[in-house]
Image (cartoon, rainbow, N blue to C red; front, side, top):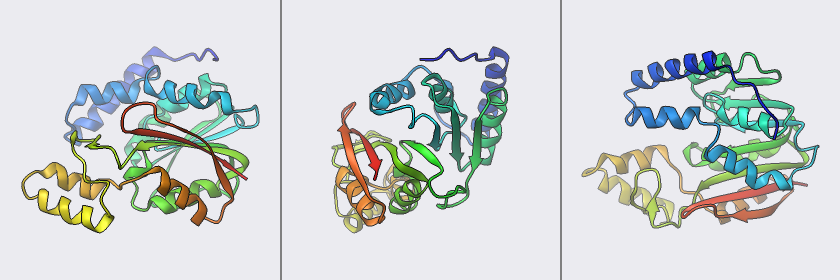
Length: 245
């Protein structure tokens, strides 16, 4: 791993900015969420450690990090030797805070996206990284298709997500109905949301994702690819590495 100089004053300013932003959004568990967003030594690093042995110098040329928030995963990518590091984020406030945090790093930029189409040319990246983003998207198939589109031939796509066939819904800790066919799942969640608003949040904000769906999305995308590894790092979680052919 490479040594990366991190300016303590910038980190402090970032922490203050993200606290102000999350407070304005009435974020619950404020301190916990701030620590998770700022952390460069926890779960993010574990993901890079998982796939690092599968990478060559080619893969570390240009990485896209999907849903990068304020750039912690981008800093970890720098530690693992990636040269050019791009991020995408749907919140303009997080883009602003993150780019201010990364202003002294070369070849690091967070891009605002509004919608499902990525603002990059075909085959722009040698690796794409996606940690717990796809289940929050409006169209998981289009999400996969777009990220395969911008990936170069022989590039690698990393995806981590909560498995729909786990008995607990991992965002809320509630009993999960994600395993059901989509129309049945939606009906059940709609009924349950009348008693518990957390079920409504699941219905509105999450999509059920599984290994077979990722395989199907890759096949349906018409971009040739193959899954080179499937890993379950913790109960209910799945990691997949996909090589574009």
